[in-house]
Length: 386
Image 1 (cartoon, one colour):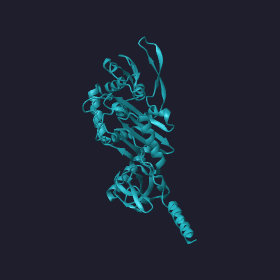
Image 2 (cartoon, rainbow, N blue to C red; image 1 turned 180 degrees about the horizontal axis):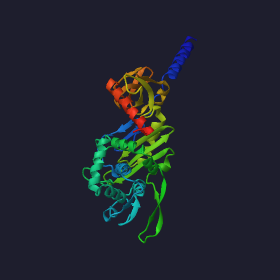
Image 3 (cartoon, rainbow, N blue to C red; image 1 turned 90 degrees about the vertical axis):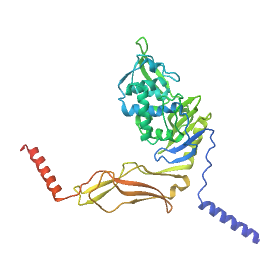
């Protein structure tokens, strides 16, 4: 029965190999979108992409940028008077009328929930006097956020020559916008009621139902924005959260946008895990400062200290903090003073800088004397002597 013993031995070896080797990740979904991307919201790491840097018409996903500027630059409770130009804007609408007064918060809500093109123009005119001036600011802000394959021609997303973005850029903008609680609360809501006066001055409750059907179709879904034009086709920027893991998916020109977005988000959650060590700005250590006017300086994370890994690798992640025992003055705010290094087994996968959170001047005789003099002056002033 030698052949039986050989067979049993081979089976044992095979089973042993299967137990040691990590399970292979599932194949990425085959989406029908012209372009798409899936990123981790905390780290920005790309988990899937298809033509993600190609420039495409973004339709109403444009309004993510409009909302960013409105929230960053406006006072949410300020009243906004709707112009005739804004009320007459074609396409998807809040059904605003000329002369109507709403708060900026209500216009942002209608912008994101109902995809109101009229709300987009009203916001632009309120903040910058005209859509053209507002669009210039949109393009400048896009550049500062790293959206290099994006150029806007209007605040609402109706097709226009030179109005384009990419799946990756839209994911980047959504990642930034979702960090704002006001934006996140609106795009994650299925329905919101607002009060306004009708043309006869009577108070009415208006119910705004989100155009993002994914909020009803996927339990973990919590955003972000739909868009559809003839040129752009159906588009969707979506987000979902499972535990502490948030993902952002973008599909452009996709007639299966709901299904494809669900497939992308499910693929990310089922095959990747977030190893979350520390938030951006989190205190990692406090270092003694040699010859400094302050005795210590805090080392904080310059960016999110987190790593996205295949699920099978999660248990093999380790973290090392590389910092000197002391640091010599002068120390400048934002100066790199160490690193957080993520390893899978013994292979370094990612490094996050640790930086000084404040400035520490060098201690010299002159500075020590002046500091002592200032302390004495404040002490005497507190006693009422000076």
